[in-house]
Amino acid sequence: MIDPGTATAAAEIGNRERYDAFMDVVANRITTRAFQPDYVVPREHFELIVDAARHGPSGANAQPWHYIVVTDSEIKLQISEYFVSEQARRARLGMKFPTPNYHGMGTAPGFIVVATDFRFIRAFPVLREDDPDSEVNRPYYENAERILLQSVAAATMSAHLAAAALGYNVWWVTAIGQQDAQDAIKPLLDVPDEISVIDIMCFGPPAKPIYKRWKKNLSEIMSWDRYDRSHHLSDEQLEQWIKTKRHRVMYRSQENVD
Ligand SMILES: Cc1cc2nc3c(=O)[nH]c(=O)nc-3n(C[C@H](O)[C@H](O)[C@H](O)COP(=O)(O)O)c2cc1C
Picture 1 (cartoon, protein in one colour):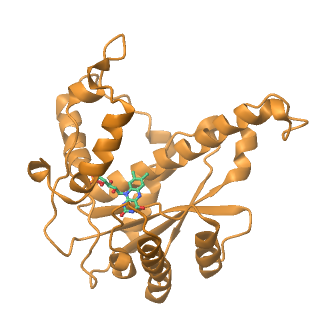
Picture 2: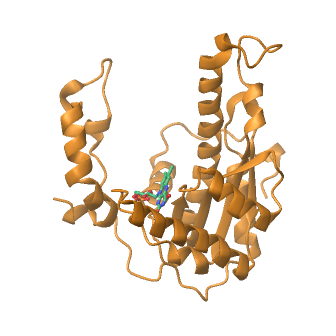
């Protein structure tokens, strides 16, 4: 673990070697949904990965996260069964989203459940601390919820990058917002009532060849001084993207999208 007293050494500005080493990790953080089932993640790797999350930024420095490392294969299987049955339910109900195959969760060597404490929303700026449920507070609470979710995502992203830096492929699973999922997962892990499970991080060596997915060009996501509208989508174009492109960008390599 990094000693907090030694973690502040200033980096040389513009050091391309350092940036390139970082980008090597960033560009090779690649999702896979099936892992080698017999691989055992050393305990130290779990610690290194969660330690990266520990350094994450958060609104009011509240650090509203908790990472539960699941090593019990029976529990992993039970959690994955929830997702597999949810996947079947969505298919039955005709949900159009191209739902992934969740069987791979059950045998993921690395399995970390990400939990948060939504009560920390009250630590972020609101108008009336004495009357948090008042109407005037609502927009501030909505924003506060976003602050909380962004905080947990920021820390979790560091954990994903740490796993990628250690050579693993990763899988970010969030299909768990609903109450049913909370009810199914929380008792298996003895999660207190006030705490919510918000995503699951799986990782390990991939079971199948991996592929880099399509990423937008820099010019498509970046503007200088004003919003560059040349890449702005109309409602119709967005609908069309969802209809024709979404499944391709999710399940095909960068070269095979078009
Ligand atoms: C916030 C967030 C939620 C995600 N939720 C899921 C999910 O529920 N199930 C899933 O299979 N993949 C999920 N993913 C993984 C994405 O599908 C994946 O990151 C995306 O297709 C891009 O591929 P890449 O990670 O290889 O760049 C999620 C990723 C993020 C960042």
